[in-house]
Length: 187
Image 1 (cartoon, rainbow, N blue to C red):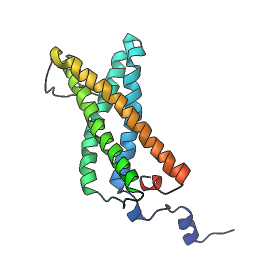
Image 2: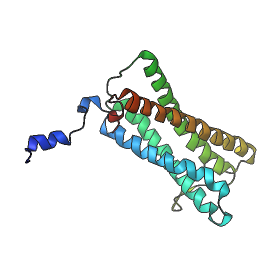
Image 3: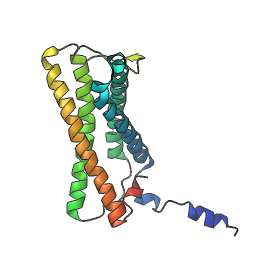
Image 4: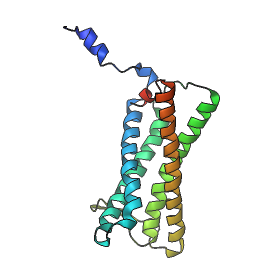
């Protein structure tokens, strides 16, 4: 059965009107950052389990992705202040919970790479971004604070994992149980 251009465009149209979705920059940054977190977190976790002859490669990737993540999060904060946001929907308690989890995700997605970058420097290992670009160390080797910065980085990773689980749980709740268009706002 032949289809007209109108039918074809409606078939592939997004289920939400553009004003009901996040801005394109927000959506792109969201998914790039999500991909980086899903690559960086496991890399950092498995470093202690890999052979010593490849552990430096794992560190290099983990630190380089983390540093990129930091800069993208700073761009995302600016984007959040300027970009179009769809209208908030749902009960006040859900909106407050969502705002809290999102705010904490933003906070820990900045604390974690900053603390990791500073910890690495404090342990005496300045960052060479992807092995190509040397990054200036703001603190240099500082063994007296290296352990504290490493602890902040490690705890931040676990807090971030819990926040990520809450975020995914909310996605499942809205998309699978409620069957509302919340997920489509960020696609």
